[in-house]
Length: 377
Ligand SMILES: Cc1ncc(COP(=O)(O)O)c(C=O)c1O
Image (cartoon, rainbow, N blue to C red; front, side, top):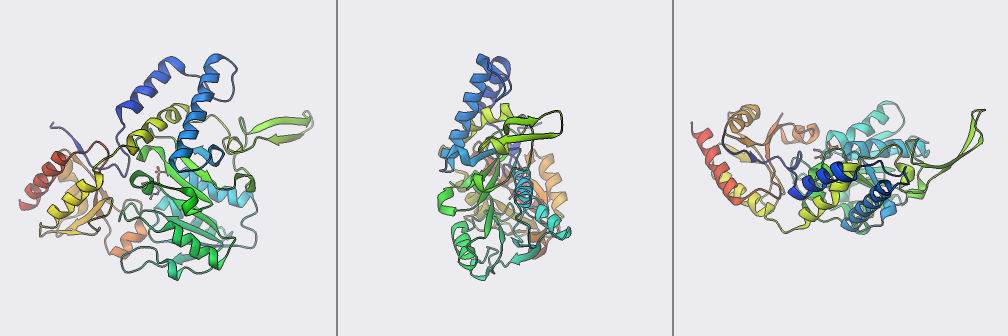
């Protein structure tokens, strides 16, 4: 088998050597649980996790107290629904506004609450270029913003969208799904001013199983998960089922149970790699130029998008993906867990190329050759 060309970073990115090495060293030489022990190893683990949290906080320009470790974006968004529900945020059946750019993970947890009759639903219109049209946002109580679609790869103006929504309702709760955005563009949380932001470690070079939930005002919200690590003291009559809890402060109060420790150890190294200069957009631009010369290809993304999505005339995306796979190229085909935007685009499935830190121009040239070979047959 020839060398694999991996063009599916938007689904999950390949891991830098530094992440692999530090996690291996941690597992072999430093492993212990976090927040539970008093031995030297436990203290080392606690310190390492605190450093990792600090690194993430610096990465998105906030404070460590605002950073909660989750297992990923999907986990974060489901948890936000539960946090809002548990903090009486669904009283009076508030209106939630989502958009057709949403990944299933960003929208389904809200639709589930709509189906249960807990909240009402509304849709934020897109403009002619499929970006969120903030000028058409109506008054809403909860607003979900996909900061960058995993199909179209264009950054949304999260700051303006939130500003506009707040003009209509100063108490609107705003949630940004930054799963794709964070892999491509820097985030400054004070600029966006969202109440919650979620992203996944595995899309930015960290391991699977670790994600981030930023909470702007942690003290405002009641936790959604209960158990070890989030309670400072249990008192009262312990034998009579009337124990009294003194909960930890943020962020621990949102981190019941054992954290994905090893993945958290690797996360700062992934962030360091991500912040190094790279030519990801140059590679996508090159492919955009070259593939737009192929008659059978219809490109659906803009040249300055962070991913390249297209369809091939008279060829099912699954067939194209299979042929590319047979030639050693891994890319994503299908609805990409983003059914709503596919409906609007008028396709059941599309083909997506996304690049990571490790991809090279030589690989792009090879991919163009392979695509030409497949489509010219
Ligand atoms: C925009 C967007 N949101 C949410 C998700 C879900 O992320 P995860 O599967 O890591 O929870 C993805 C994954 O592809 C995504 O692209």
